Length: 459
Image (cartoon, rainbow, N blue to C red; front, side, top):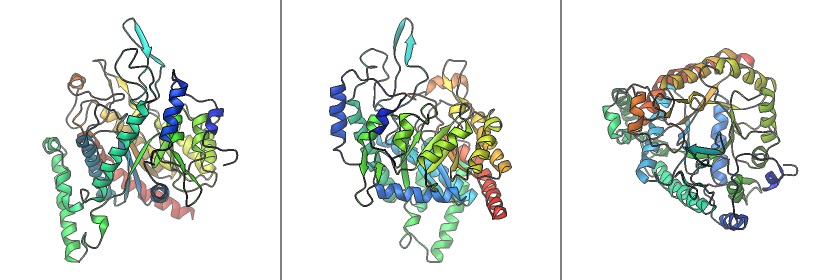
């Protein structure tokens, strides 16, 4: 924390921060946001970090999923509910199959800003600034819409607060009761190839609950049967907003970014001498670091040490996003360097970003088989290296979209145009997300056993 202040990031080079026309208006908005209530609380953040520490030890698994970029237009309680349902379904499959508790972390209630590969976008002869996320500018292709507007941060805060309110009600109010698993089904899942698998799993859980009830273990005496811990996360990209949401915990004097429980630094903004690393080194939140083909193992290790000088378990999650063909080329070197430095990290796999292609119909998409192959390749490398693949990070939605090709329903390039709704990158629909959970649950169990044996052998 030496020489760190909540605004010290401003003295460092920083990428992907929007340029606003009216700095006075920007500062007025940011100062007002500083007076708003926190979206999450320090005690919640500490609780999440404690759960994540168990993932480091191979005693739990991290599931992180949600929208590529939330939008104002698609904000609706049904969409929030359906995404929550799918994450619960995925977690249930993994918990039952892998016999591990699942830490459930949503890309939700704040995932608005997106770094773009180019600062401008061209349509025909017209060139305008790129769409940067609904809390900065609008997706409509005209000059007014694409001009960064600081007042959009008010709406992003309001939408995040409403989303969190609903998620807390769902997770603590009985919606997540294991006795009501049948209510988690979406209508179109009942018609999907995953329906029978999930119904079989539901029946097995019902039998297990009936046995527990006969033994006197019911939700009347154990709230774990009807509530879940559900946490929120987003990329800490828009640093002016993140600064305005950072508060001092009155019980400890520590700084917490109260915009989310967990924030991550993206593949484009993880410069060791950059503003994003500088900001994140001063907050107590658990932090993710995206690692792509341009990552250098020694730099990632140094960033870990900068953000987590005490080598605290649960603080750092390394989220690899190499692409299914590049995993064996890059991941082993990174694992070996982190192990050599003795750093405590969670190893999570993002199989989405490295597998984005342009379809024959012109839509950006992600072939489902490539997504699955990256996950399996990551598990294979960790098995070979004696480390624990402890997380999955996916862009997905509870809506019945057609954005990623393949899967059991065999979405084709020609199908993409029918329900392509994303504001940025293609997402798995609920069928594909649930199918992925079934396909990798056995891998999680095997990898957990490998890692435990490796830990026992080392000790």
